[in-house]
Length: 328
Ligand code: 8YV
Image (tube, rainbow, N blue to C red; front, top):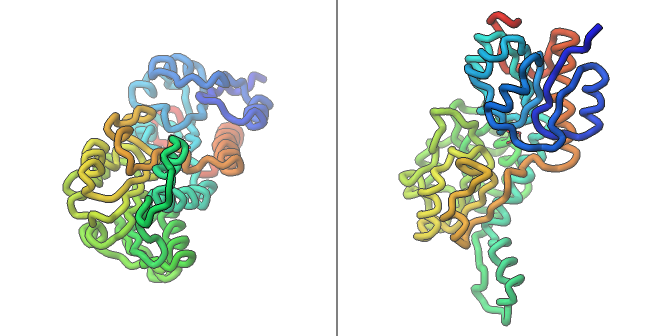
């Protein structure tokens, strides 16, 4: 019997690829070029499943051109690269990789907060450039982390992980804003107090963004929000590019409207707003919040398990929709 045909659209761990090859006829991209939408469309012809990363857009046009497709498994918890409504209508199951990256991503969010507040990359660049000739009392004096107020916008699993680190590890006063309020038990566990977005922006010493991207959350933080923040505040974005208006942020950093920012995600990444590259008071990392070997392996495995569970046994592990259309 012929094996079902799938596409692995980006390079993954060879051992996970090998598992897929045992049960599927796999077209893969271990060369790791990012497919253009046209190439992705072309490579999907005849495939019933695909393993994608956040850069692979699954939309109505692609679904229409590939009516045989039954599942797309994203190797990411975020899935703003999927048009889930179109997938549901086309009978295509969407899956993501929740839970396996929560703590690792929260670790990174906290690391970025620390690096930003304590000016670690700015001072390292200074040292590497041979500019360190003497000690001085205010050299790279940054913002206090322990005991300060941590504001978390978006209080899903990763936001809660950051809240616990701040409250329990660093004695921070944690405030949060979210579409829905947490249960009293979770609020107590995270030692977090629910406030309005405005109060959060006005009172937090460190604002961390962990909201999922959607049309509604586009530019959650723009010039108006930056203007409400304390001039001594730091802003950390580990959510998605587009949650922050990067041009407005670069201007605010240039004007010292806020003290500093730590960014792991960017509008239009892998391009980075040129003005952000010019300002010193920003820590920039290339979308690596989930990047530990163990976690990336767990993400790849979960995406592969979703493909195997659905295509071979009819039941995915972490489905995002219930397909209703023709292919189901
Ligand atoms: C992914 C992420 O590595 O899971 C997410 O939503 O942002 C990262 O962990 C990235 O999106 C590549 O798929």
